[in-house]
Image (cartoon, rainbow, N blue to C red; front, side, top):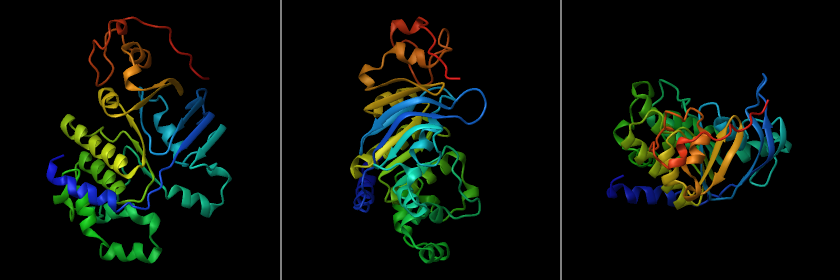
Length: 294
């Protein structure tokens, strides 16, 4: 992003003064969605408050399921889950809603009402902290259009403030959904494939906004990506998932070409998405296939 947007970013971060970073822990978690194969298979890892983590792996690896479990949107079939020090599924309904209010969850396909104005869609990021009356008032007269404009400016969409959602491209909808997070009070961002509809330049800029915003707030960021190069470049920790299993969990400096090859089985002739085909010489070899969980 251009330097002139930096004050807006700082103001948005300052507006999140009550943000409390959220930590997560999965202990031998499995998720079975029906059928022979589980979506997550005996998975264990911990994400500390304020940490930034990328989830990578092929389609169907379990990345979206992992985010849903972390976001208390899906209950594990086995194992234990801790979100901000709590097992979400032992809480009362009111306490569970309060816990979820600390999380900003962005699915790959944003559920934005087609006839809604962009300004309203962005300000929906503040819904967890509003009363029903405040929410209804903002539908008729947006409560803080300047905050929405500043958030959109981080994604070069400030000119879309008063547009209708159904007039946006797929990539614009993705970025509008992410702008919600900038106006929220979330202590953790759980973001699923935020770059899938973006060109390389916009993808890099968008990821930079997410990383910078989380860092400035001290918030936790967990992001699933197919762009392996960006995951290795922008995140201090990368978790590789395949067939519901954790294949590796380490810093980018310790992720080798062999690790990436192991993650993407069709590696004899094809490079992993978003990587140099010649990451390391050993990436041309075919290691033993990691076990599947049935």
